Length: 429
Image (cartoon, rainbow, N blue to C red; front, side):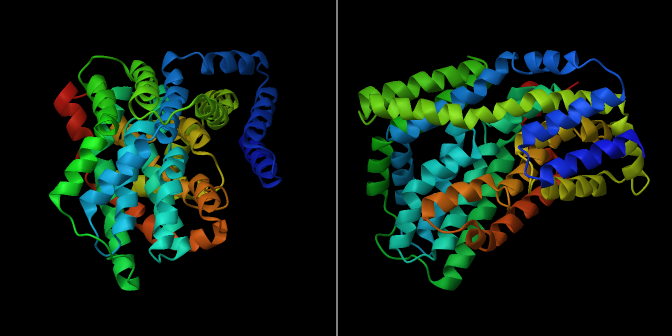
């Protein structure tokens, strides 16, 4: 039996046994080092190096900023703006949820955080309007996943670090696909809501209430303008932008809206530490990723896939199917770190832009957020709505289809991802 097969069996057995993922990867990595007689100090060196890149600081800062904006009143004002913009039509509160998640995604950088922030307000509102609870939770879970696609995105930061791709280019590349997926989710929401007769009560759209809501929420809308405008305008780096976002949210929460308290600040810090604790996965997964070169895994994968087809569209479809399957039980962060080193050389050899592949990877990870048994967004939505993950898993299927359609569109029209970065920064060399 080959060493690679032994490692694959060890990893699968540990995962099926329910061993925590970072332990499973760590033990498999240690076994790999033993089999090829490399000192175990590689793991220690990689562990230290994995947590030292300065851009990595961006992740906890954006998570903290998003949480502060949620508890400081900015999220509720975004929902108010979205509500008055959409008006009372069939599925209007569902459409508001999707639109509000798109807005908040530009602040949090995290899918589960976006789901929690917006869903805690909109799920009870949809219940009051007679929405089926699993459907309401499914809307929130699927729209919350936009937090990982629309910049700033924690997953794009990790992909940028692993693939050595420009993070500002990745952020800009996520804008058009993010809006496209938002539209697909809104269409799905409207079709289902219209068939089931949800919503439609209340006031129709008029400029007066919308302008009042927009004026009241101007500080909320100012946050993504400041953050993204500062990054693309060259005023500060993504990491500096995350720091600015934290100070902005503290200022608005304490002195403008005055809804942020010391107790809420401490809770936000606790939430941030829990959510960013997943970065512990970086140490074993990066070490394992380095070992793939020793075992010549990228070459083996490339030979295996190209023996089936060398059509880059079909190759991306095959990788997409694999990513969606693996995302059902693997954390997105580990998925990106482990498999970018395997698949990026293959798709690059076929002429796929690394920026496009990054956006493609994150969309497949978003589908992983919505598929059990792991399904991070499903877990958050279940907690908010008070129903089981199993019931939400059925209701979320139409939204998974919307994400798959978005993924296929990107495969066949890759310029949707590269147009804005190439226009602003010039074509990558």
